[in-house]
Amino acid sequence: MSGLSAGQKIGRSVIAVFALGALSLQGGSAWTLGWVFDNERLIKDQLVAYQFDAPDDILSYVEQAGLSEEGALYLKTSLPKVVPSMEFGRYCSRDEPGIGVLGCYTLRDGRIFLFDVTDPRLTSIEPVVAAHEMLHAVWFRLSLDTQTDLGVLLEEGFAALQADHPLRARIVLYEDVNPAVRIPELYAIMGTEVSVLPAELEAHYAIYFQDRTKVVALADEVYRVFDTVEQELMALSDNLESRGAEIDGLRFTYEAESGALRSQILAFNEKASRPGAFPSRSEFESLRATLTERQNRLEAMRVTLQTKISEFNTLLEELNTVNDEVSELNQGINVTLRSEDELQAEDSTITE
Image (cartoon, rainbow, N blue to C red; front, side, top):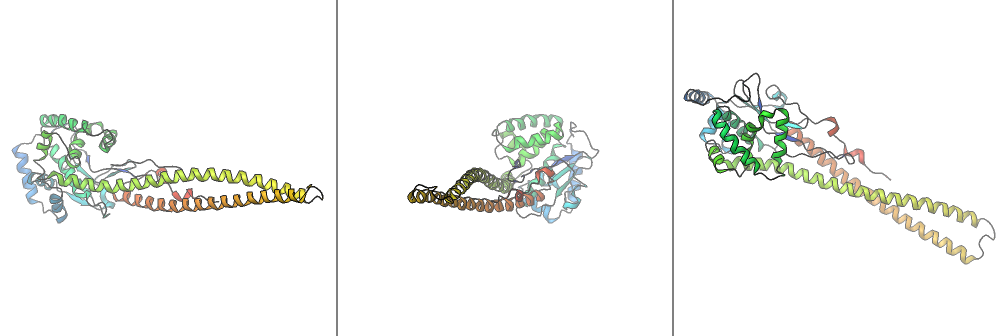
């Protein structure tokens, strides 16, 4: 999950964060309730999965995410459904601006719902979301003792992450919604997005993944899309900030010099209009030459200023293009921004 603050001066758009999946209570059990996994439940899961006529996209997620037979079972027994964007809010809802939800596991009926990602740059996230929600389905079938033991391992793996790892900020977003979600979300996220885990935790995930590196690679692929755009956005923003400061300074100098020269030219002309005001022709010519030279330098400064303004506005057009791309990406991950985040870079165009 990548986050970026909007720059008021140049209208930098926000790269929103997104939650791959969420849990939806929908009248279901409390977060602290652990479900005992017994033979009766397993038989029921197997029966539901066997009767589920999985569509091709769901079957492809099993392969793409590297799920094992066990992982495929818990995906299928959750009757996963890919939902068009216009209908998704009926099944999975989260209204916080700037956060996109791409899937949910409903505790009431044990269903998985997945947002239909149509942006071709982001479709690699779909198998990741499916695997993420599958792990939620698994979590609520584990005993309380198993959940407690896994919680220790998950915290150990989380503590080993780098201080600037995006998952650290992302978990805070989950906890802001409900503090009790920390461990269940760590379980789903670390299993699908973190490559290096404690050995015991890796062994646990091996039950549900035949090759967990596949799903981690897919998550990395999508995050690189956002990282690339974010880096481009920040580079353009920083460049424009620097150029804007340079233009402000040059404009101030130009206007001060222009005002001073205008006064001196008026004084020169007034003096020249009075016979005998200049004691000699050479003094007249010398002063006129000095003013002409300053006038030429001022014109050169004006040309330089205009060139820098044109370059600034060209870069600003590039920023607008990237801002449009950010908007498309945000829409692609089911994000609604606050109105103050939806800045328009066009408002910052510099003119003479």
